[in-house]
Image 1 (cartoon, rainbow, N blue to C red):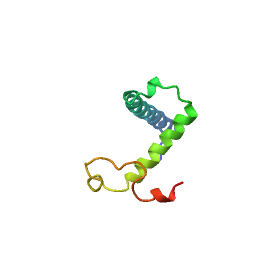
Image 2 (cartoon, helix red, strand yellow; image 1 turned 180 degrees about the vertical axis):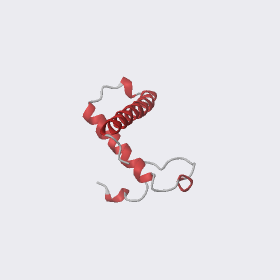
Image 3 (cartoon, rainbow, N blue to C red; image 1 turned 90 degrees about the vertical axis):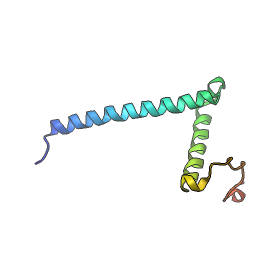
Image 4 (spheres, rainbow, N blue to C red; image 1 turned 30 degrees about the vertical axis):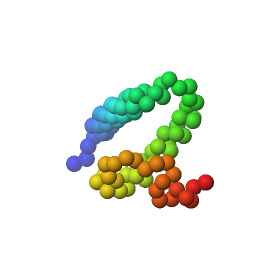
Length: 89
């Protein structure tokens, strides 16, 4: 049986509320980490900060391809180490 449009609108509104709550939790989490790292004390242009966050995202997405246990629990690789580092200029 097909759902009436009213019911679908209610579901959409409920899902939008859930999305907003999830985005708020994520923003608060990232904000807390940024403050712990001292980013709140720096005057950084928003575009530059966005670029830096995108670079961090790319770094962790690349690292995320390997299972956690394969990455090890030791110290992280120094900057420039690892596969593909020599191809970057």
